[in-house]
Length: 171
Image 1 (cartoon, rainbow, N blue to C red):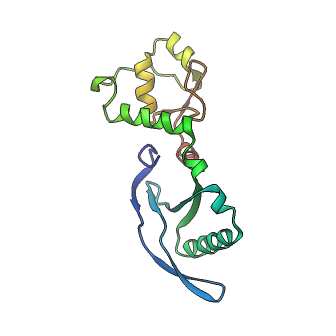
Image 2: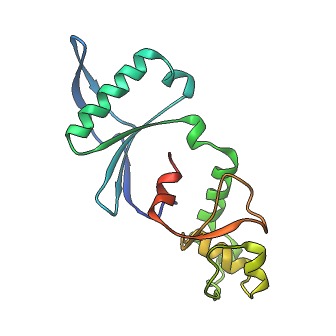
Image 3: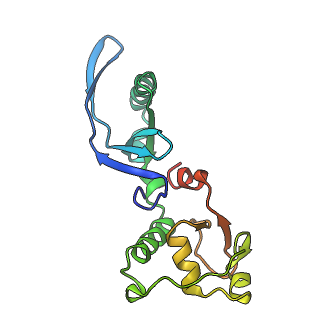
């Protein structure tokens, strides 16, 4: 998902370890990922199973960590396995990444695309002369976006890329 997000400049695993206080005790913590965005934002991300996150002691811990990171100018997010592993979304992102990196369509050159595909369904875009390959390439490059939580089909609406579409991949 980090690779697919257009606004991600870089991401690293276990970027740093901090010390923080919770109750009377001092603890250490290392987030799973740091994500740096082109607009200067930095997300520190923890991924946990949904049932573990629901435990009261973990909620308190993550609330405290959110405060600590906010005081350092960083945003802390806890994502569940359910959020990041949505079956349809994950499969579609993997396919679009294969297109982006030339591992699909035999690395064929990028086709020409007519303008004005935004806010049309794929079926409408095909009717005005866009090829299926061209649409897929624009989706892979994140020049166009669409809902990734349902199968891409003729009724899928193509949208112009907005930064909020990157955030929606995660939250």
